[in-house]
Image (cartoon, rainbow, N blue to C red):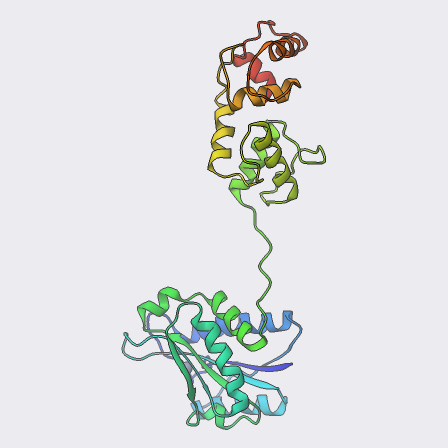
Length: 306
Ligand SMILES: [Zn+2]
């Protein structure tokens, strides 16, 4: 589909309203994002904003001429309202049934963001709707002088809402970013020598992937937690308990740290520090040049987890 996108004003003497934010800045921001998103979705886009004009009517007529001569399928004009500081919400204008077919879903999509629904309105007094040959809509996204609207305002969300209303498609979510908490988890699991389901150490990418999930699940199974693969508060607390290097003695200690120890020395992870665990620990201590006393103190912990 071929869209004519006209972000309002931005062409002196055709300038927008100013409130808590400037209409010019917002229409350009939302309009530019929308154009880029429409192109990314495979549509053709014609930018209808003129570079200069000698009057407001001159600015408006150039916008209509560009849309008409480019034979766009739909003309979309983007504006922000201003009134008395307390009026707020979204309204979309159209003058034809074919325009209203787009106006309604665009309005629905924007009000989902939390703006008050002022309805689809008759735009027969609006120059750009009267003078474009194709279905056309004018979006008053929100009020630039309303605190409520400007608190809600986010140009990326607004552009996505308009895109969804125009095309019926939700934009794909952005690629996951590096999450410092996930980096910490991956570092912790590597330090604990907990590998993924293929026996591989984790890449410390900060991105939650299948490897991180399977390693988390492995740790949860070892320490007898519910193994959902999600590192929630209980899992993180258990990891931190092990990092405190608690002293473990035969027939005394129990719990997750013993289970973890058992995993490392290769015996059943039953959480009971009995004879077979003691024997495996003594073997581990001997192999690492430590006194084979079966007590897991600071030196043995250092050999286990650094
Ligand atoms: Zn305006």
